[in-house]
Image (cartoon, rainbow, N blue to C red; front, side, top):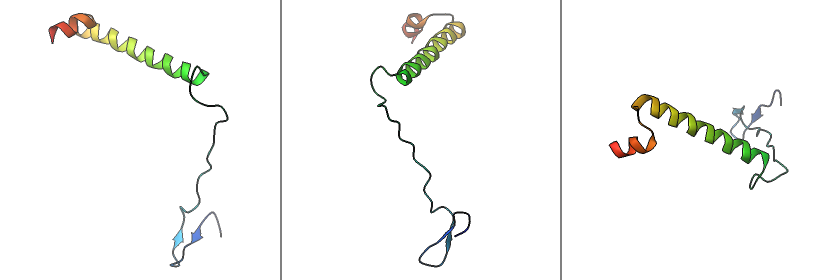
Length: 69
C-alpha cells in the first residue's frame, strides 16, 4: 500500500477508500453556547443589512414595502 491506495477485490486500485478523519466536538451545539451566539449575531447582521438595502432600493421601509405588494 503506497500513498493511501488500496486494491479492491476486483484488482482495481481504489484511491478513495480511506475515510477522512472525523472530528467530534466535545461540547453540545445547542442552547446558549458561544457558537450559537455568533451564528445568531451573524444572521441578525445579514437581516439588518438586507432591510437597509431594501429601504435604499425601494425608498420605503419594510412595512411600506409590504403594503405596496
